[in-house]
Length: 71
Image (cartoon, rainbow, N blue to C red):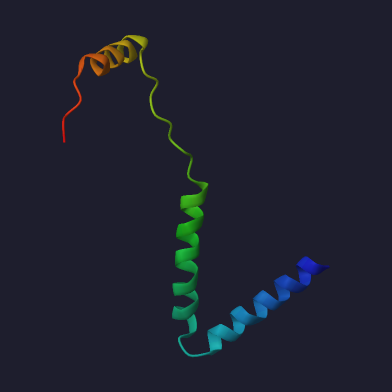
């Protein structure tokens, strides 16, 4: 029941916004950022590729050999 009442309130405010100043343009400019935000939130997260063990070993050895820079 709560969801239906919230839906009706939202519907009435949207219809009232159509007849107010700005009209359809106001509704469109309100919905475009919301749609863009929804696209960004639902986008799958891309993971970094796995490192090869040889690469990790080489990087570790280079870190041990490299001398710290004096400031």
